[in-house]
Length: 247
Image (cartoon, rainbow, N blue to C red; front, side):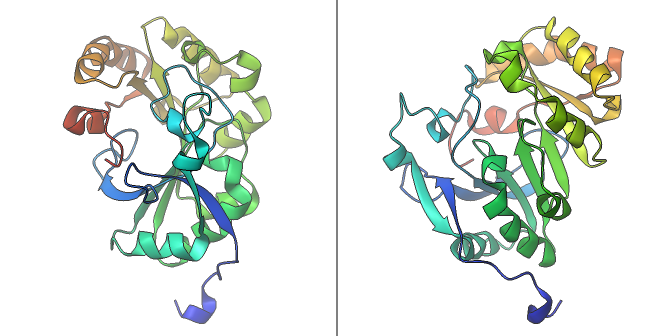
């Protein structure tokens, strides 16, 4: 594609998470979970979230009772973000958070520009904010993770019917559920039935940030996946590197 045909980046900024070094949390690693596990990937972690999950392992993106937003957040132009992403020479991008969809109006031009440069783009979202047309056209794969009661978030905040219905109608959306105990599958089955989600698009993943927790959860979860025709995902990055930022 000629430069003249590419989507121009507007003079907009996004709020990003900072790494401990102070640099923006844009890094090159392997996708650790979900449908694309094991894929070499550039990660872009955005700040801010509209939910408050008790077991969240990225609370530094939203928990301002325990983290200082002045230290954890920085604003960066779309051009600067794209330049950093392109520097890794890896055409697979995962946009994560926090909750990326809180910034989708500013994010869409970046995603469209990278799509025009041949990127495969995944967005990780809690499924409470439906995508606009621009954002949906730019994204190759949606990793939707509706929160269950084990998150500690009230049901009317974590389940937004219009948003989940919109994602369920997208063929490239995978629904990843964080499981704390075997009984959580009953809540998954209710949501799968309510929103007519194909079982092959459903992924169960153990909750935990230690090797022990992931291994123990995997034992009973694989049986549930076999029984209900769901996919299983480990948290490969936890098994390889532990609960470490920037990996």
